[in-house]
Image 1 (cartoon, rainbow, N blue to C red):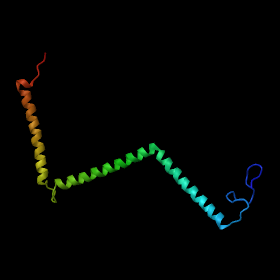
Image 2 (image 1 turned 135 degrees about the horizontal axis):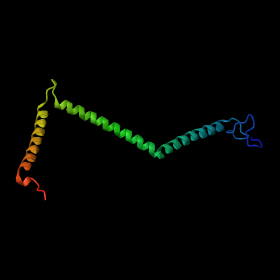
Image 3 (image 1 turned 45 degrees about the vertical axis):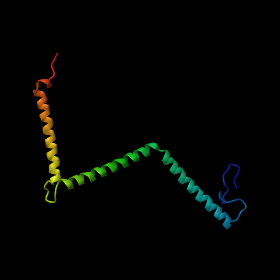
Image 4 (image 1 turned 60 degrees about the vertical axis):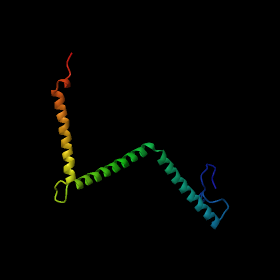
Length: 126
């Protein structure tokens, strides 16, 4: 019951149905109402999180950064494992890759020097 100001009278429970005693049906209804309230609150929380784009973007960026860092670490470990043997000496694969890089750099340097020294390689000023 409420008084004229809309307040509940002392000793009354606002969730109880007026004129009903504490019966199992009323208790079941009250439990069902409480369960529905909790489910609704959970749904509202999920919707709020879904519509919080700024936080979702930030979380996704952190997640992506962590994944990339883990992949880089894994690749770094694989490269280290393949580049040296158990004694710490370079493996034949690492030596051949290193030799190929050096040969490629030498070839580029030779072409640049050759173009610079040949008469057709220079541009004339006008």
